[in-house]
Length: 149
Image: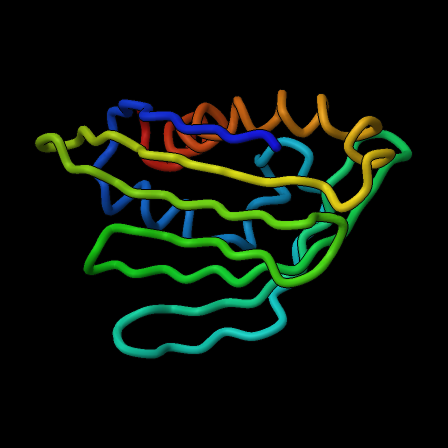
């Protein structure tokens, strides 16, 4: 059961990084292994934006689609991703954005997951591990493209 925790300093404002991570519809353009994403529902409740989305992840001929709920809480600078359905036993992901000063923040990224089947874990596990280890870097590079570096 892989577990990733990373604090990644970036030269972008916390709000910009929050907006970038919350914009899940753009993930296929730059997130490692993300080959497609479809938002099923979007609603607002108590100052939070709650999306349910299907994400297709894969590499070459291997593809898996899973459903997650993404809760974006701008007042807390926090995004929580919780697993609903797909090839995982569980998947939990959390982003926090800590403002350090004008144009600088720390991106806190945690991810914990386990595949349902041992076969799928053996087949896709190392590929997912490598991709997840580079997630924060992919978001920083995207921020550099969108906001300048």
